[in-house]
Image 1 (spheres, rainbow over the protein chains, first blue to last red):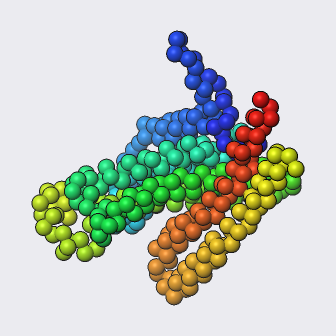
Image 2: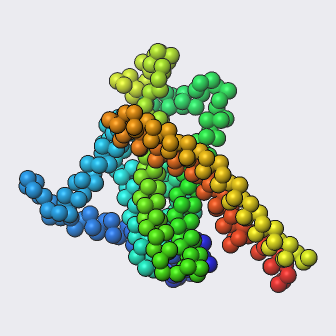
Image 3: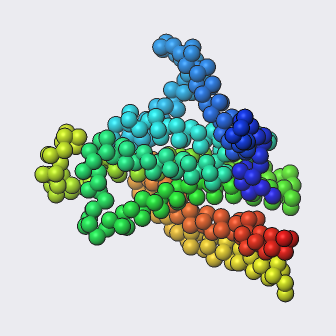
Length: 246
Length: 92
């Protein structure tokens, strides 16, 4: 049994004089999801209109963006605009690849540890980028010395461990869905695998939502001034122009 | 018992123990979180949205410990590094 689509090599790219690169199922299905999202969005936005009653597909995208906007605003307690592109992309990619799991022959790329690690690394890098751009280098770095400088190693460990947890959580949930269905097909075919696939669809959507919400929470905790910070480090804030207007 | 038999037996027993013991804690934790959230929704139906969202996120966090155990179990059964090492030594 394959517990990871990484082990299934679809074809090999060969370059003259350099060698060959094996292209596995994870990469191919990631391309499929990417193509689906990009082409679908392009097709809908080509015929975009500002009429009072938009077309069905445009309506769907508007509802999606509106919902994402609201969720990000509610979770982060900040304006959603700067985060919408990053969080929305994460959510749409994970949700699409999890939902496509019911298509026969499609193995969700999120069921591979490589994909989820890549996504979690994106979050790991996005957190300091957003934090520094919103608050400046010093105010962001000061976060790591909170509540006392003694906590510096623990803050760094928590940053790393939550990234690992993010990756393993998504991978474990999606992979467990596929593996359990595969085991049940050999034990009790036809009926029970369908029920578990339904459960897998639900889990897939919830995991996509949770990944997006957790990314929002991590980014928001790096960008928002903490409670009591204004009083405690008022002097430090007035020196850095980025965080002065907060 | 040969090396392969020993490693196989130990892997299967430990895989079962891992998922059995590892799912007790998350099950208790999730049950407690869900019951508290239901109680909170019953008391404050207006806040149902916030409570549900927080509940989902915390359920996912609690559940991840069970998922770690599941991943370890899968590694023990399907991708056991010791098993592969012994097989390679026996074959080569």
